[in-house]
Amino acid sequence: MKSDTHADLKVRNLTLLSESELGTLATLEVTNWQEIKGGSFKESLDAWQSGPSEQILGLGFLLKNNPVGMTLFKRPPLSPSWACANAATIHGLKISLPLQGRRLGHSAFELAVGQLKKEWPEIATLMLAVDADNASALAVYRGFGMIDSGPVFEGPDGAEHRFEISFLP
Ligand SMILES: CC(C)(COP(=O)(O)OP(=O)(O)OC[C@H]1O[C@@H](n2cnc3c(N)ncnc32)[C@H](O)[C@@H]1OP(=O)(O)O)[C@@H](O)C(=O)NCCC(=O)NCCS
Picture 1 (cartoon, rainbow, N blue to C red):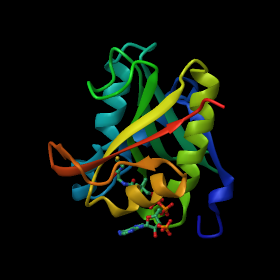
Picture 2 (picture 1 turned 90 degrees about the vertical axis):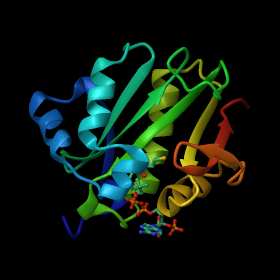
Picture 3 (picture 1 turned 60 degrees about the vertical axis):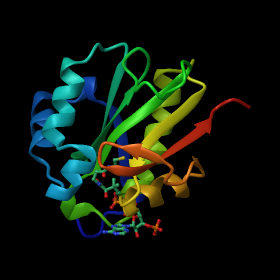
């Protein structure tokens, strides 16, 4: 995998992954600290499988056909209470631990937003919450040009930022 670059990353709706690919995704790991921040791969897959399909969109990221990450989007009424009615929220963006730090997080987020627009074209805004001490996630969202509230909200794990970006022209 050493010669792979973030440019090779692909996104796919989780409904299109094979049982074996979903099984691989469930075995991927992040650190214990990161599990607190964004859940484990297994927890995110369980949330996707148990959620109403029209309100939760699961995406997998593949590098040379190998699953290496995932994320979820939610929309009302499943979204958190702070999200606007016409917004989707992103949850638990994750890259497998051995592959972190190679710009895959940046690429995955870009791919996920592109796929969100295709899958749920009526969504006008993307919103998210992230803990103030989650430096790598903050870098991904800021790098994309999302509007940052700053660490002004009190979340379940302390100060959190909320980010949003409009898809309207
Ligand atoms: C957030 C996450 C997806 C980023 O994935 P990644 O592949 O490591 O990200 P990238 O390599 O694209 O790097 C993103 C930025 O984080 C920085 N970074 C990576 N590891 C870091 C660390 N341990 N501390 C501080 N910054 C770090 C990189 O330098 C880069 O910053 P830059 O754009 O200013 O150069 C990954 O850390 C992850 O899976 N986290 C666990 C789940 C999570 O917290 N998700 C977010 C929930 S809101």
